[in-house]
Image (cartoon, rainbow, N blue to C red; front, side, top):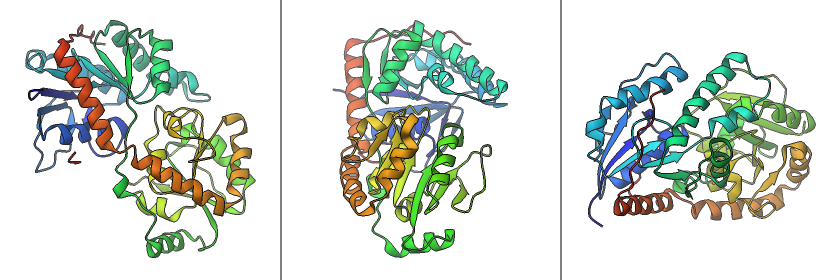
Length: 369
């Protein structure tokens, strides 16, 4: 196939955050053999990047204003975008994409929440309404990051066309547990002994705090280390350490004995795959998209939230057995690296370009592989 002219559309482009990191990885990979331009409001562009950046105007007062104003900014570049073979948007961004990757179903996420403020609920409802209008009109190709998301798009937005499920990948080379000196150093910094059990959680406390608190209370013999940007839902306990979010998670994966992820909703959960790449046994709820990669009991554990705490505590008792599970987890992670994602997304592009897939305009409302 000839070189494609690709536009990647995303609100912001940086190395952290699922959909943003995803778009940046694709930009770096595809720009080695295609012409790539990133359309975004904010962008972290490496000095040696082969792709181009085109700024899209947006109002950044809060998440809602960003989501609602970005399509207006994109409209100003409608003529320029029409010249691209592939217009690949990351979720609802407006414009007239012919490929969309669904990184979340906001309506499903909203439906999963309990006990959140009315302000938060109203903001999410506005975003869900905009997303719903977009998908009901959209006629191009859809990529979902998990089968979970594919089901939710059909249930909540009545997406009737075919959906390509392409799970996120992981840069397995970044994560390993071979540095014993670093493991000891991190544990000492946290006040955890070499032979004590360290359990790690990384992510938003909004979706997990209830189950993490129950776990910490029921397992006083283990230390729960939480790495999060969340300011709400924090608590104090002798066997709990809550740390600020960081991009350098590898030392914490390397210091831990197990990884827990009792999320009430995650379209994928990239930290699960990172933990698996680090050789950790993972204990996930069945509400994370990445849990679809786990064969429970063989390369990780997946439990329903109703009995997640009890099942996880039982599973944590034998760390020797868990090492074998962690070894299998690492194998799965290495088979799901980003190069696999790049190949599968590129094939979608080729199919779209060959068929000349068009899309109705929505209403306004690296890695070298």
